[in-house]
Length: 355
Image 1 (tube, rainbow, N blue to C red):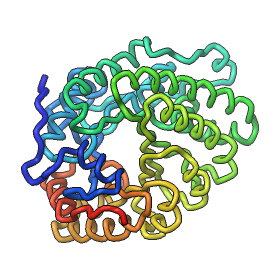
Image 2: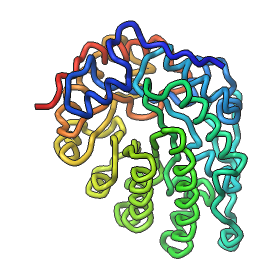
Image 3: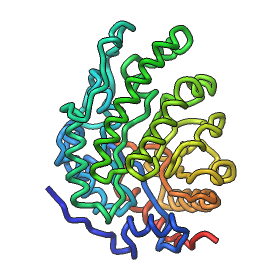
Image 4: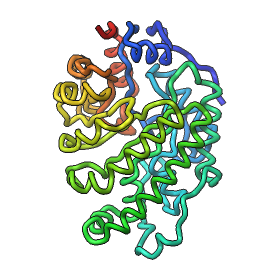
């Protein structure tokens, strides 16, 4: 397994040093930058998608190889929403190339929920990610910030129950939904406690909790209490705030999002980043939001550079900090050169510190 961390020759600081300086309001060699790559990482390491999600050494090695290739500011492993869904009994399909997906509904009726208990960190599926965290921490701790993604509670619930069924349950069987959310949240908390042993921060993404899909009232009732509990718990256990990604037009739930213990709120590329900096930046750090498809995958170098500069110009107005990211995961087939251009553009912006 590759264990050597190589700092990009164009950078004057390690990612850990850069983050520490920026969080303290001091000068840094450049802005923080994290292109979201997901299964694209497999093309860098030569790993299969299956091994990337099931082999702890492949997971850790892939993160190191990808960092050495691009020099971004964070390493991220699972279990993600998929790994937790599988630990609870769901099954995923892993294509040879591309993004895994859920094919069958696991919770076909409400009675099945009564047979389930939150799996502990000793569950074999979760142990794989624990071992990957241990391996990654032994190589990268103090050099590159590390996070473990635990998905989002409503998205995991939808993986188990199916989106349409879950939304119907929110209307017709709210107590069932709360019991399901409690099961999922307790499982995620078990993961947090385990991963905290290896100096991992926590990342979350809850795309099905998009208010365009569920509305702000359902968000307040079925998502907010559990996400607040998770971000508070993660901060307590890891002493690090959470990185949260939310897809879609989230404007109507911003009042909820800004109460979480967040290291950053990563925003979809359809969000007005300047508005986010103005309305959210007084409360939490924000991140975003270059279009991963139209700009990074399909764009020219000039278009990528211009989009990066525009996002940094808008996002840097956030008083609580800003990280340059893509608006969602880059497609699996994105050319590496495009990511190089993205990183090169970020390196032209020195962080001058907060006044």
